[in-house]
Length: 366
Image (cartoon, rainbow, N blue to C red; front, side, top):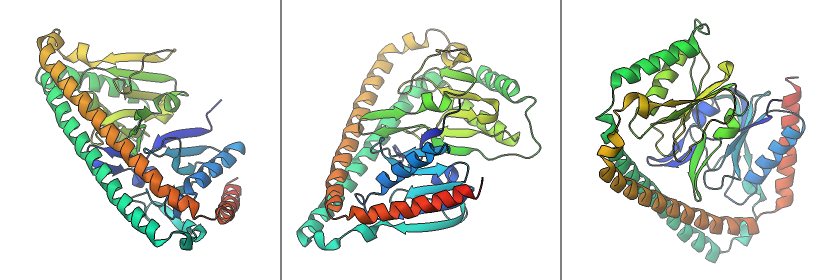
């Protein structure tokens, strides 16, 4: 039985700062509801409730999770009716180019500003400054970790057989795409399957690939050509008119970590830490880029240097995660002030308004 929900991230806290993929993820919708208002005014709860109600009706829902709190939702898309709902505080890049209609729902009307006394306002302002600083430290530390990772990659890039890597890529293109080409090219849909969170790396690889017939687990080392190969496969799929979902790395969004070809019922992904998995069913296979493209003994030849790099990299990733946890704690303090000043009966009315509109829109596509 097909899954009735799909789970992604559409923004990330990365080595290049806050990174957003809404423009691609929400492209082509009939309508987008943007929920405005500060944190704590019930937006994420309403989005979750609406998702649950649509799932209960048997409708497919795409769920976009918060990288700060993965159990909360930034937004959803109702697949059949092509309708999106997004928290206005966290989206970026959506415009009338991505949807036929955009409607703003103002959750700020549920906020009783008289309950946010001047002392609270000053405290909130101070906390916002601390929050910005915590995010800045997170991004700076992730960037330092990325530069250390670049050092790690160089040992393998310098040893790599690029001719062999190119042949592997070409063989995959022919094996995967032959017989499926179309006249018109396509544009890939860009998403994150995981994110850096206050509790460390988190991903939805297993749920996203659960219904697929074939999964190719790419193994290797930093710099062994995994992301480069995925970029070339994605470009070839687009040129040949084959639908492709392109998943960016939640640490370095300039790199790719997974491709899903829905029509081919196939996924190929970087199956190394922090999202390391192993074949466990029919249709799973390993593609080991280290064994195939790097001379034997490379690990051993640079064992001391790599151990030092791994230690420095791990320390920076842990530090960045601690700054992100600090950001989440500060955000929770700010949120508490607005929760205390929100009239949730008005939030309930807004939810009912949205529910009614969603049901009407869903009915129009039956």
